[in-house]
Image 1: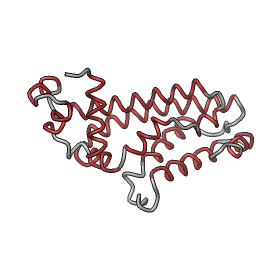
Image 2 (image 1 turned 135 degrees about the vertical axis):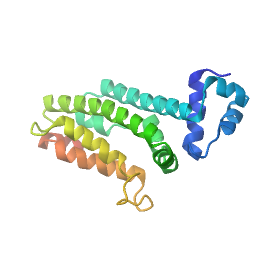
Image 3 (image 1 turned 90 degrees about the vertical axis):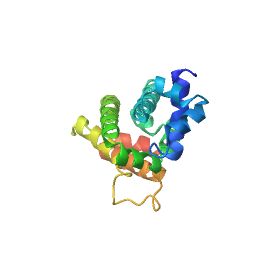
Length: 199
């Protein structure tokens, strides 16, 4: 049997393409070219695999974001920097998979999204602190609240009845949400940086 990372990557692709609810352990065993018995010896249920794929995906995104933090010093430029892997995951992490997770595995989904929101908030707070030192962000707002609010806004397209995904693509929604957030926290100096970015 393949190593854990390869297994989780292959299972993640299956879940993203068809949705966790639709994919069976038979499908997974077939994709991995192992017997169902061998698969169950390593992973006792599909729920365990869902947990593993969520942890893997979240940690991968968080690491990529930390790498960008280390690479780009300007706080505003950092927020608009695009990473190919994060973009790809964000676009493919499409409605079918997310909606099935929310509907059929809400406890697992909510637990991991809470963890993701906490870790992402830490990264955003760090960005705010850096931006304030650079004179790019305002001082008169609660960085913890704004960081969590931004996460909530960014994730709300899938659970909100107020946005129709056929009218607004996920990418457009994320861009508008980021711009809304950045306009709310930047100083005039920060807004000048935004104007000069190839957005």
